[in-house]
Amino acid sequence: MDSGYRFENAGMVITCISFHSIGNRNVGLFQRESDGMYITARNTSKDKDGTYSWAWGHYFTGYTDALLDYYNRKAEMQRYTD
Image (cartoon, rainbow, N blue to C red; front, side, top):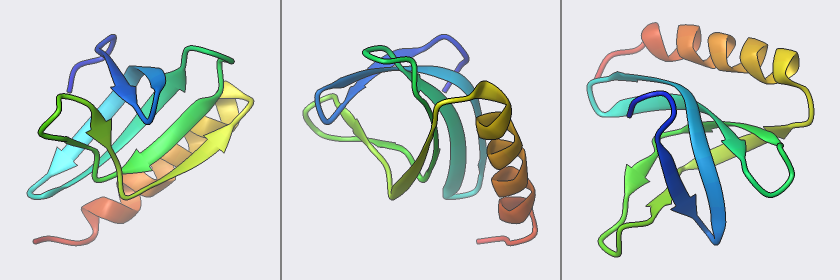
């Protein structure tokens, strides 16, 4: 998924800020359009109806906290292989 890509998740319009995948795993940093909240999410996938879902997400009001969480989760994901 490229930076700037917009999609829908559970009725929310989301913009991808950064995305990294390894094998069957991925982690993304997103921003919710309605209120500007930042989201870090793991294992984002496209559903049959064209919307997206993820295994879990963490929500942040500040970009710096969200970015730090994204980098930490990306590093953690890279320690494991499929």
